Image (spheres, helix red, strand yellow):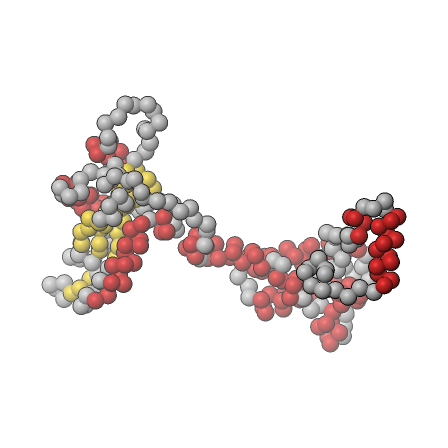
Length: 298
């Protein structure tokens, strides 16, 4: 039985060789292990075997061209080049670099085989495609980031409130005949999963302003079923600029405890850009869109 767990048929000469090696090493069983290659970790083939056989360069020159071509491939992948297009461009780059070092090939049929880029040469740098996505599709890149699972167990009502604005995809006709879409101003209580919300429909268009959010926030504080939150989680948009002036007001809903210095934290939490997964209210918006808003006439 081999070390892989499968039956292995051994020749008599192999067994004699193992016994001889075992006896000459004073019974050290590690002598029967497979001998490690001396060139482990070293680059044995630069770019491709066909290119190495064709060019008359020494090892240092081949290694230099190999490293420069790797930099070229990384730039293409980070720039969003597709695999087929990238292999063609890399082959042309290899042809130019080889000619710059003093070797040119005039036969087109032979040159196509010599300067062809192996697929593994491209795949080794394919991880850099994440850099292209991070630059051009930041949301998708942030969605794949590792998350920390948190729990709301033990949170008191109105201890942490998430504030956000949602644009309802329902067309509403104004009195003057123009079309508008309502804006939903939501305050999501993480302790109870209740949401205080107001719908705003602008008469002449435009976006949500500071005054609209302030009015909705004051109405929530005056509502006997909600009140003043202790911590307010908000985005970085201009319509939430007023939140920076609420630090003292939010202390009204806090417990009366002795001041020790450790609890004197900022009560306004600003969300990180493209981090919608951290805001519980986004999940509530999705449920409202799928279960309620889609059935509204308009």
